[in-house]
Length: 176
Length: 207
Image 1 (cartoon, chains in turn brown, green):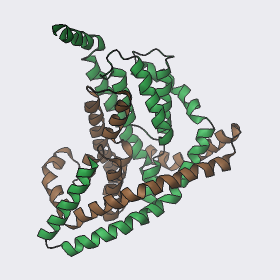
Image 2: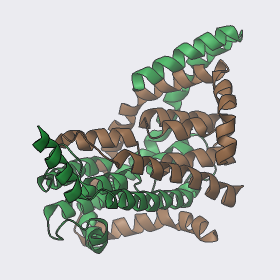
Image 3: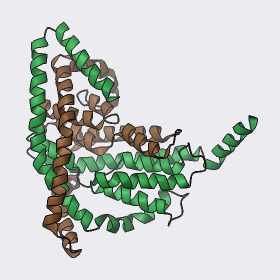
Image 4: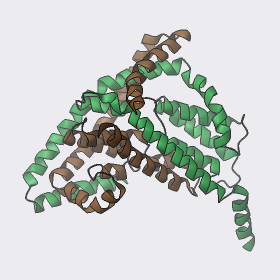
C-alpha cells in the first residue's frame, strides 16, 4: 500500500511535466493558455462564495446548537453496524444529494477535526471519490426527456455506498 | 431539495440552540462561519487558478483526444449494444476522459452530447436504455486523476500535505466504479431491452 502514497506524491509533478510537454509538442502558447485557464479558476471560486457562506452558516448554526451531536448520536447504531465513524456519516448521506452542501460540510469537518486528522482525511476521500448523483441524473436524463430511469439510481447509489466504505477502510488502513 | 436542507438546518439549529441554552454561541457561530467561508474562498483562489490554468494547457494540447484513443477498446465491453464507430461512443469517451482530467466545464456539454446520441438509438423515448444507465453510473463514480478541489480545500484549511489523499481517492473511486459497473450489468441482464419493449407492446395492446 506504499504504492498509493508514492503515487500521490509523484502524480502531481508528473501531471505538470506531461501537460507542459504535451502543450509544447502541440505548439500551444503554454503561458497564455495558463492565464486563460486561471481566469476561469477565479470565476469558479467567486461563484462558489455565496453558496459557501450560506451553507457554512447553516452548518455552523447546526453544529454550535448541539443539533449535529444529537444527529450523530441518533445515527450511531447505523454507523457502528457499517463501521463508518459517525462524524463523517452526515457527509456520506449528503454527498449524493448536494455538491455545494457537501463541500461546506467537508470544510466544516476539516475545521473541527483538522484536515490531517483521520476524520479529515476520510471526509476528503469521501468528497473526492464520487459525484452528486441526483444532480447528474437530473441534468443528463432531463436533457433528453427520459422519465423512467429504471435501475440507474439504484446502481449509482450502490457505487456511492461502495466508495464510502472503501474511503473509510483505505484511510484507516493507510493513516489509521 | 437544497432549499429544504438549508432551511431545516437553520431552523433546527436555532431551536435546539435555544433549548440547549446555547443561543449566544449559535449566533456567534453564524457570524464566524460567514467570515470563515470567505477566508476559505480566498485560500482556494490560488490553488484553483493553478489547476484550471494547467488544465487549459491540457485542453489546448488536445490531451482529451489523445487519451480517448486508449480508452476505446474498453467501451466495447461496457456498451455492448452500441456499434464501435457510433458517435455516441466518441462522446462518451470524451466526456469520461474530460472528467478524468478534471475538466468539468468541458465534460458536461460532452456528456449531454453523449446522451443525445444514445437517445437516437433509443426505441422508447421516455425510458432509459442500458447504455444510458451504464454511462450515468460511470459518470457518477468518476475517477479524477487529480482531485483539484479537495486538494485546494485542504491547502486552504492548512493541511501539511494537501495532496496525500489523492491515492485514497483513486482507490475509493475505483471501488465505486467497479461496484457500479457490476450492478449495472446485473440489473441490465435481468431486464433486457427487447423483453421490456415486448411488455410495453402487450400493455399498449390491451388498451
